[in-house]
Length: 538
Image (cartoon, rainbow, N blue to C red; front, side, top):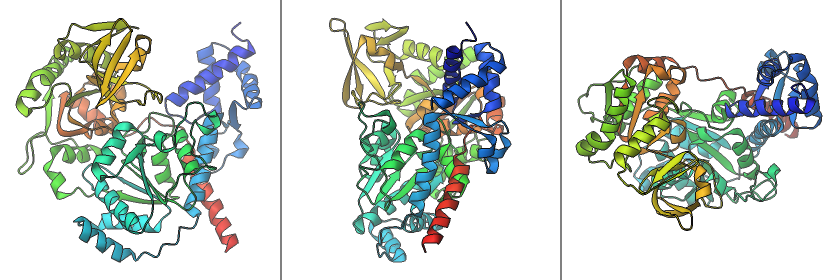
């Protein structure tokens, strides 16, 4: 029966799960009732009783209108969370508020002397804004440093690490993905780990601990913790990270808030900044050496809502190209030609290892699926292939891991190359930058072809060359932050192939899909509470 109570309860949880995958932490109760009624094909009046049952079972949390304050009072019917997301949002606000208000470890550091010492010993010349960021890192308990490419975030991190080392503080560095952690290690010459590894993930541990060994009762051993690519951190991971940060430690979140938000639910970095509850330094000065790159110049133009420059400017490198083609089939042919012939011959880059096609869509002529099939044909002549679960892999294929696999030590977004197939033992081997990982044929659903990937999957990574189709067929997905994120993945070369109209639509559309979250509001409340506590104790 369609209106069976158990079916409706299961349906509500399914709809809330779908909404979480769209980035929402909660959903207004009135809109949820409508959505559930449509999906389950039952009368709206049947749903509140099932919702109340889920509240009683503690599977969802309903904040009634009378419990809401500040900006949240506009949700007159109340709001509904999946219980784990409620715990994560509320816990993140409380823990961040507590950490920010906890006294610093007393280290007698002459700030100006420390800054002069870093500039002298590291060969660094800080700008005024960079000096402000390093100074803030010595004075604040929680600090956000945000800025686009070429604004000197890495220089600041190196300076902060050097001062911490000089004062005997233990420093831990981490990033959300393996590729981002590797980039952080290369840039700072200090070991960086994934946040999961930092928190010592163990699959068998209790779900309430998120599978992490590090928590309040077993905190990290550090005086300073720096997280890079913080815009990629979702609310659940931030909550578990904060549980493991010792109260006396300093936490620095570094990222680019103008990029796409995390794949998981929430807009954590954006909300932390919007709350005004912790220190924040925004970097907007592009350094002189970076102005030679049209990629960096155009990324900042796009972020400011301006069309990119297409012509070479005096003293600037020829690293950013736009090719005007309207027909999707022609775009596909041109992208294949760029990867197979044009870029390798003109720029000396490897067609598979150095070039990454990024596309806004999964379906369609220039969507991820079709693009991968055509690029596989063009770039991999091997005849040694295996087909499983609708996927066809050949030896030499570029592949991407689609979920975190802690036993194999490979993570969502890791890119590797298929190096062997053994039909006798039903095994496929992939080389992930020197680490060989074996997959049973029945585990091949963890892999997809990666000649072309979605822009979301590229977050936290950099590639020598990026090629991106951009057409009006993508108009629902054309957003400024998506285009900006794609362009900033390219280190040496960016090619956009499509129409100026599509480019203009993306640049004008600076209203990202709204995510329902109250983290900023809860952080402001937590700051008020901790502020009144500290006044009472003084």
